[in-house]
Length: 234
Image (cartoon, rainbow, N blue to C red; front, side, top):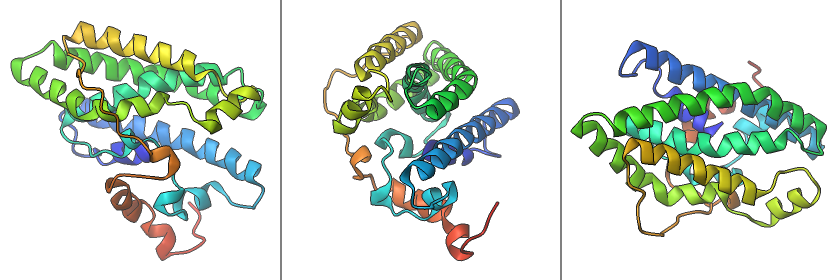
């Protein structure tokens, strides 16, 4: 949901018309996937909260998204690198969730796979095109990776929630997701001629509710209408 909102900020500002439309459609796909997941989460919670309640009436510390997706858009290359790192993680995750012991979650993942495969193909192709393009495009996409790489490892971190979900057959093995993520990322970056940063500094905490300053600004904009007009339905 947070990445969907970030991408929606490109609407009307894309570098070319086709990419303006593509980024907006990907944003809609992500928000749609988030909607079905939040609907299911609300039912499992059993407190009568709807997907709108979970999306628009939580404070920042109650959000558990990875720090990567809340980072600013930057230029077009920066946005596509952020998207690629997330897409490369989301595809093996959803493929694994198709076998989840939670039948409803498995159905959501299965339905989302076609969109997710397109998202990864789109972002991969652009990373390669920019990395193997002009001197300026290569410099910018390399700089984007240098900035975003510190947040990428959080995507495939394992914590107590993941371990419990794996144990009950709800979630796939994060080791498997991590291996496939690494393989995809290294393959595309190698083809693009982009160097992976050598420093091992990792910034995480988003999934425990510890966010960057950027999330507060996102929520202020995203939640404004619902908080201004309580109980509004779309």
